[in-house]
Length: 324
Image 1 (tube, rainbow, N blue to C red):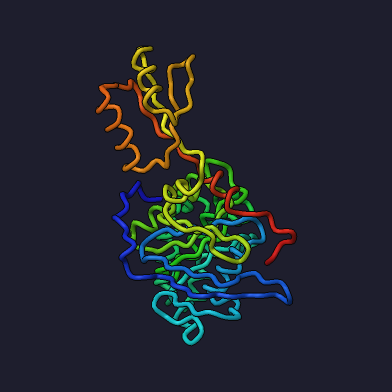
Image 2 (cartoon, rainbow, N blue to C red):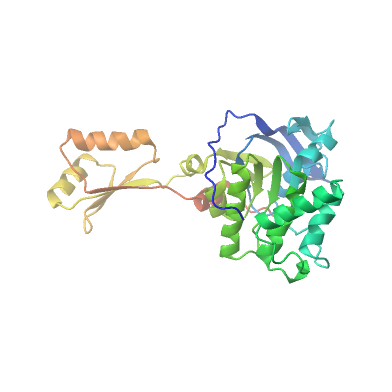
């Protein structure tokens, strides 16, 4: 794989790589998606979170033209999903939950098969395959049957195969499920490099740390609807339980602070105060200004905010029965 690349800044003002309004999908009398709206800027990582059966894979299948929506509108790579599906397919790559790698043939043969499916000339196909195998550190294993690959190697090969057609948008549906921590981190680096090269990544994941680590924006899907969307920090501030911890060395300073900051929870044994806070800059400034105005100096200030686990559990419910 290439050496670490610093990603370019990404902005919500960038053109939309994916946009959807009111996406709906039902299977019989079971509503899976009940009006999903999305806007994903080009060159960013977007993570879709939700419990099992929430409809994450259904969203990916609709946006990648594998199934049709029952209602709503969507554009992918500037093409209308309903009227220009062929153009959408030419612009995207999809790596599903289950590997598309054929274990009976070698890694190189898997790559060349994809090159043939993309109608690349033989010489160009071999060059693209060799370049991608090198990029994903698979050159040594290229002539071995893919069935002999580790889980991490198969996932790398899976994504390399997805990139044969040079897609501008990649859908990764739970790409690290079942991988060991080292392989997961290697996959994260691959995602960062893809985005640094200008690719848009739509990620669904069960690992909240993964979304926190990679995503520019995160949406939480529950009950067929997007129940929250924002950056990781914005989502964490939605959940109660955040606080600022002030620690003092001198008992007098601690007593003075406790007397004036009456909303704080006292911890006399450690000379600390815990103040409810949303973690915002405005609230931190208010606390610091208050201390300055009263001539009180804290020896340590730390901000504690809920993590994405807290967000996930607060915003989602476990569906009574799984959807698709």
